Image 1 (tube, rainbow over the protein chains, first blue to last red):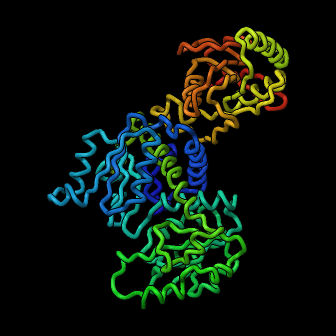
Image 2: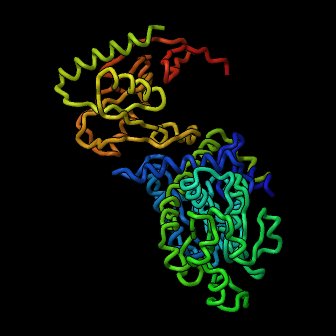
Image 3: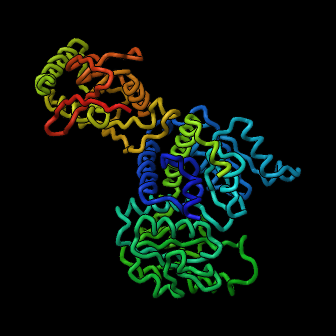
Length: 335
Length: 167
């Protein structure tokens, strides 16, 4: 899987052409994404926050699952790259008239789309599209099922690097509903690839994947133990909409055990970063005083999200255009 | 290759003449990464300009994106002064096609509307593809088809001509 994921995402020269998963991407490439994003942060501080890289290109936001925040940061990122942006809420249009996913995408490609930003409830849907349906359109994964949400993970990595300067020596704890979290999967991979010392998962067994150690993480069930000597705390959102059956006694019980309060934060290293992918549930995963406190970098994560999305969109578009020009993409669909 | 200190001295004299002829009160120096920044810093010292040097990375404004994609090395541009209404001194080490300067001017205008831009280049290789000419030039050179010129630095600055091997 890592090998096929790598082959699908990169050109023959090792340039990004789709951004589907952290899996399969190596440390130098992830670092290049972060470096490129750093330059886009500077663009966001100018009078005119726009660069001409994707001028004349068409980016289609294809959201098969509702999302306001992720979609709007992708839209803003594409517009700051000067692309034309089309937002399609597929749940309410073509597929409800019986059109298949492949037909919808082929129609969009026929409208000369250059990039699809795709969110889908099925794990692997963006891979399927990149491999078999429209390999000559750059695909950016904006979250697929329980699989990956790679741009969210990269904006978290950018936030950590801004504050900690380096990944080596860091201990990072991911707290909460890991089992239903595609963000957590991408984060664990990115953190390990970038070389942190230790990734910890803190959650009850019911909210952990079956073999958490196989992901490269150490499991804790109690905050008091898991947060000790930790430099970064990433809180996950409780995925109400993904909860099937009674995995939790109650929200208030979860908050008592795993909610990040000032008391529990004191177990971590002084100055430990508090992160959350949002939207936050105050009083369910995190105490307001912590979310708004001096160690919280939650709003900085949102700003970084635009820069990271500009970076992967421009890198993937560049790789895709390069490949179209050299005509090496024929082999992709069949391989 | 000529002595670089002499080239910089000549450019400084020509810039002084240019400044007084145009009645420019103060110039804010901006170098294009990487070599242009070194030349801009050298000129700034000689001219006694107090304003710190700005640094432009033109990666996001290049016109060859659709042919070769995003350049792998990019670092943030840094302009430590307001450009709106200022007289800017834009500096690069080598000018040839003029495309880099076009990209740099497009980028500068995204920071605001400068009052004027003066262009200085250490080496002019001719072979222009766009109607862009420096106000001040250190030296004119012509190279063979397989030759490339390179500025090494920052201390000391040194111009070298390299032979490019066959592809």
